[in-house]
Length: 67
Image (cartoon, rainbow, N blue to C red; front, side, top):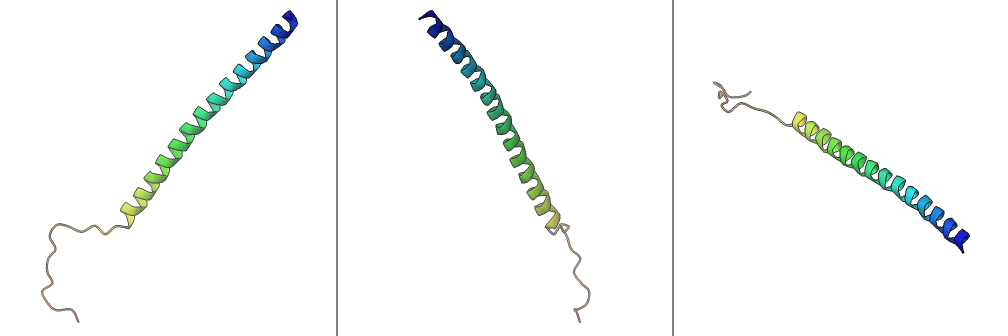
């Protein structure tokens, strides 16, 4: 009976250690996923800004008609 408890306790400790490692991995992957999403948003925003036409607030009208 004592041996069964000892084996059970060892197994519980082993499983708790494994759960802890998996929780750390989940945390790391969650953070990595968050960073990659933010990077993607940043890149898409930069591309969008780079392709937009920027003009001044006042444009001089042409003095003559276009040919």
